[in-house]
Amino acid sequence: MSTIVVTGGPGGGKSSFLNDVRNDRELAERIVVLPEAIHAAVRSSISPREPAFQRLVVNLQKKIEQAAAETFESENRVLLTHRGTLDPLAFCLSQGWSQERFFAVTGLDPVTEYQRYHGVIHLVSTAVGAPQFYRYRPDEHRPETPQEAAVLDEHLGRIWGRHPRYHRIANDSLDWGTKSQNARAALRQLLAG
Image (tube, rainbow, N blue to C red):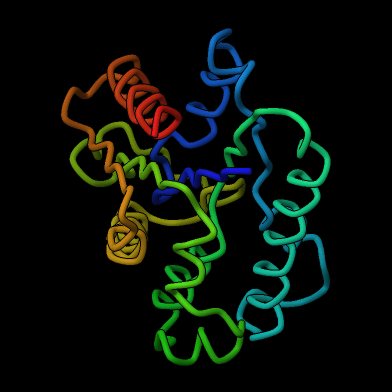
């Protein structure tokens, strides 16, 4: 079963894109959308600054993907996951970790993780190229300032940009409809090959 990652810095439109996929009749029949593992991890008593938290996020991500693959193994559907196992690396780099420390703590290998995923769709944060649309919400799910969001997005681009089927969806058009359409075109391309 193929799995495709939807990634990007805060405010890139990942949640909106996944909703658009759910509402696209053609795509919805072929896709199973998976939730973001971080939401379960932040409800734990472990601080996000602790190494154990990063292991927890990675392990939850893998378990979500594994459970979905087992559930839908007899169906010809593709898993579309809100972030992948390497996304936590961007947050760790922003906190001053080295890549080596992240891989030592989580036990991950980047080559193996690239092989886990059929493709990557990177929805660039609005903090990059369209800052007037970035919504800073420190009391909700987006505590990053526009500057912090841009740094995270840059890290994610470097991390996932090495994947052989990486699609970067920028904020060129400055309207959500076009950005979503471009992301769905990238998804259709990944589904075709």
